Length: 489
Image: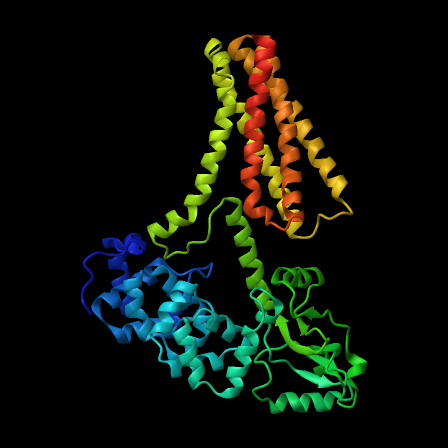
């Protein structure tokens, strides 16, 4: 391997002399998988930076066997995390030494860009075998990210049954239960006994999931009647009928949005749930491990959307980061120009009374902060289904009342500050009244704008912020300067 002439930006903080010396010394002592794993992970299960230094050092030296030794001791999820910390150059050196039996599990843990790098190193036949090792939902997720030529090459060497399973999963819309579900389920007819079910489970077979929590009891038309938890089944007598043990199930429609599915799981504390087609027939199941990922993804999307950015990932280029943020900043520039035009209407008044220029930003800034607070609460309530027609008026009244009371409180505070600063009771009155007006407007905008966007079918997390801040800036500037013209000039 050729020596790197310049350490990647991601690893600059790992390559100082002191860290490298400790890493080299520690490397000599790490001879067992247990020792390597203990060294690699901290108490919080995050990767130790010094372990990453060991990997980089082995890559620099071209020591493939050492790389294999360091990687083989880690859980697939930790290897996926490691690849995220490395630059593209170092990943090229590390990927070939990943244990083959870890590839399948690692692919499901990787970011899309890094997954593509790993997939490119695999022959279509090897990739087809990897997909066959995965549950149908994970296989579909990996297959979805492949290039068209890669998809065709993999399908060409894949057995007919697996090819049909992936095709069936890909037929459903993205971010729906059909795409999320795994097709392998443990199901039994309603006339079976506990003993028959246990015997079927022991026989195994490719049609059974690797991990499952419930046995779905089906009627003759293949519709779920109920479910028997595995823990209940194993404690029951063999001769008992499944219908005596089963509990009602919460069915998921195959076309339901994954956010709705996550909400159902969270609300009813589900571990798994059957997925049914339009006729009510069982076609798969969704398990809680998939839901945890969905909840994390959706919450991260909402958090980033509130700031007007996208998830660029740890390996994003500078141009990619700039591109993802440019248009949002351009929109904000437009709203800033609009707010400044409001100030321009009162430039003569500002020229006569310099104190207006000093106090003018305070009212707008307070309104923006108050509006963001209300907006955040409203977006969270909409996302968790805590806000609907039943409590809409009560919630709107609560937020508006809170805005007015905060406005009165800060009107008093700013009135005192203005008196001490400028010794002008009229100026104190102006800033106080403007503060009440703008915090009232902030509360109105913060609750009504996301409600309106949600009713129109837009994501309030992604688009409400710019509208709320525009309202608070314009109202803040106009109320303060307008009152100043009326009262002071």
